[in-house]
Every structure is written in C-alpha cells, then in structure tokens.
Image (cartoon, rainbow, N blue to C red; front, side):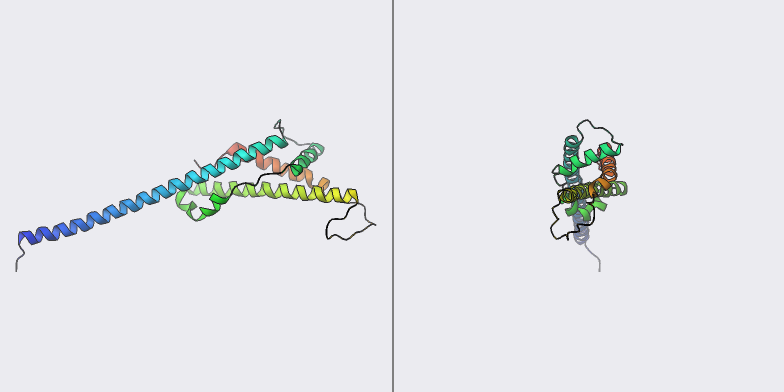
Amino acid sequence: MSLSSDAVVAIISVILGFLFGEISARLREAQTIRRQILTTKAMLRYEISHNLQRLQRSWQQVNPKGLHIEDSSQAQYFAEQLATLPLAPFARDVFLSQLSQLSTALSAKEVTATLTFYDDFAELDTIHRTLAHLLEEQRSFTSGAPLPGAQSTPHLPPAMPFLAQASGLWQTYQGTVSRCLAQGSPIA
C-alpha cells in the first residue's frame, strides 16, 4: 500500500498546521505573561511613588528644614510633632494584591528591596502610632485623668512614657525616613 502524493501533502499539512497552532498559542501565552509582568511592575511603581510622595510631604510637615536631629530634647520635640500630626496611611493594596506575582515580575534583588521597602513603611506607621499612644498616655498621667480601663494608683508618681521612649523612637523614625527617601523606589 503506497500513499499517494495528495495524502502525503494532506498529512504534512495537518502536522504543520498543528505545529503552527501550538507555536502561536505559546507566543500568545508568553505575550500575556509579559503584559502581566509589565502591568504588575507599573502598578507597584505607581504605588511606591505615591507612598514616597506621602512620606516626603509628612516629613516636611514634621521637619521642614530637614534637620538631622541627634540631641535628645530636640528629638523629643520632633517626636511630639510627629505624634500630633495625623499621618495618612501608606498604600499597600497593589503590593498585597500582587504578592503572588512578585517573583515572576521582579528580579530577586527587586523582590527583596520591595519587601524591605514595605516593611520600612509598616515600621514608620507603627512608630507613629506608638508615639501618639505614648503621648496620649503621658498627657493623661500628667492631667490626673485615668486612661479608659486603667486602675488608679495614687501612691505612684505619674509616669512619663512618652519622654522615656520618644528620643529612641524618633531616631529610628528619622533613620528609616532618610533611608527610604534616599533609596527611592526599589523597582527599576
């Protein structure tokens, strides 16, 4: 049994059609992945840029001259300024929604730098909230009004929780802000 030339051409055409279809599907898939990577990077860059602008604005409100504060009493003053300033929360929506895509969209160095960047912003938020809480607590102690849920202890002198921790927290905050603003976006 020999195949006619028409049958051979038909078989080769089917095989070639299948191969070209597979190649086309793979190219479309690669293009889709590339688009997702570019979209993820662009969205993260935007969110990071927005956070850096927010940080710059709030830093200018707290420390308009951009002074590096080492003195403990000055640090307490600036810590109080920070504690009384309403700090806008830093955006994390894109970061959290794209967390599963980071290893695909970014290099290992960019992933590490991005995770560190968002950790730094979480630390800044925690320090701000801690300072605000300590200042409120200290004002309550010095005014004599008990904190909600606190038991009165008249035999103890008023505690100064804010003054005790303000300088150290300010130094950490100042260092983290300086590092974040100097480094800028971790995504190239």
